[in-house]
Image (cartoon, rainbow, N blue to C red; front, side, top):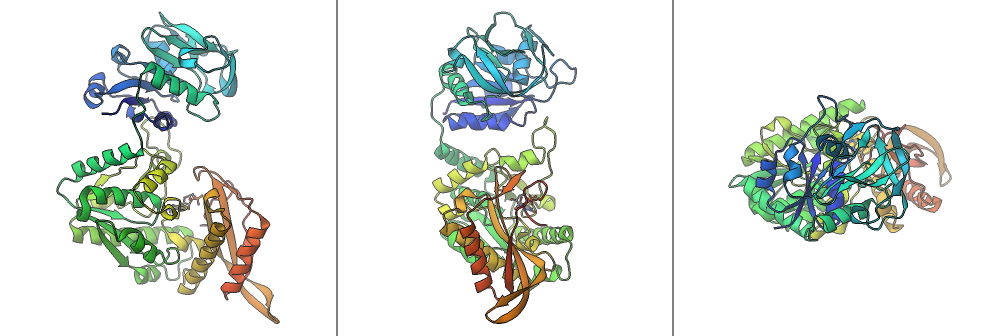
Length: 509
Ligand code: XMP
């Protein structure tokens, strides 16, 4: 059994990031709610080596603030409290928590008093990232100060009991020595072994899928993206041909996508259903130009088609490639506030009454890409850019006629092809072409032309919440533009989109 570190979530947007950072050190970690009891923990985590209490937006002394089982401090495993978790330690163990000398937001100078233990490897002063109003203003009994700032007691410790409180955020990259602090806690203080890897994750999830599905059948919607592909492979390894993977060809997919999917999945042990629904989708979108209507029509029809297969296959389980950022965007953590409602239309048949199985729900995208490579998916698939559920339909400004779809599909392919040739594909979050509803005058050969305009969109982003247009070399843009106008006879002009998000979104519709 692997050693485990639990992160108790008090409503921080960073709770999962803390677990992620621990996993980066090769130690298994997962997030639990602040409402779990010591008994729950002992039953479920026999090899528990330590607990980290996350931050959170509340004021610990308020009546309704999130609490936890006080007995965690007597379990005999080390506890590290971060920000709100630090306040929990101060508040529960007879210290004082209040506004203190002042609030601190952003980069703050830390003055280290004890350069060992949890702060081993720290210099006398370090930059740390703060985000707090309250702080611990009086030490709990048996604690000492290990570091402070001009305005607060920043690190407290009771080494004998193995309890540590830290006001700053070691999990964010702005805190340069944050990784060092977590490493000290996990290995020196909790005595964890470096015994977790993606291989363990894969083996563990395959077992879990087997257990959940039992003797039933499961179904998964393959979108051609890395998340659903990884889940399909894990499920194939777990339940083989009792998995039906469904690819719905809406007609608005990337060039040669059905062939790509067949090639990627036909050798895996699963039932692969390719549904050609192009006519239904084109029919449903006839005459529709409003972006929201397009999305709604496509989403509803997709669910209908998918539903028909699920009934036919007598599936009891719906496998989904939901990853952690999808959940946080939809307000996935109980105490955190909703940031934005995720608009995934590709695979959310909520009214299908199928039981959900989401093996990647705690992972970040780059972890999923690492799993993809480990389970043997091609690196082309593992590194694919995100692609929206409604597909090319929302990259045609105007009606999705067959001709328009063909133009944008080929232009899109040229953009991706040139990016790969220039070895820029992996440096960019997303790249695509958009067909505009205008024509412009040009000159081609000796003749005047009056043809369509394509916009090229290349963006860099970390999480798609914000994005900046990519500053790629002009020569690359020139190659893209030349190829599009040479190879697509309906187009005589290409423009580059230089809008960031905000104010623009990544997609045009
Ligand atoms: P926006 O356009 O909102 O997009 O800046 C952010 C990211 O989400 C993708 N996107 C979607 N993905 N279904 C999806 O699965 C959708 O309806 C959808 N709309 C946008 C977009 O491509 C970008 O990566």
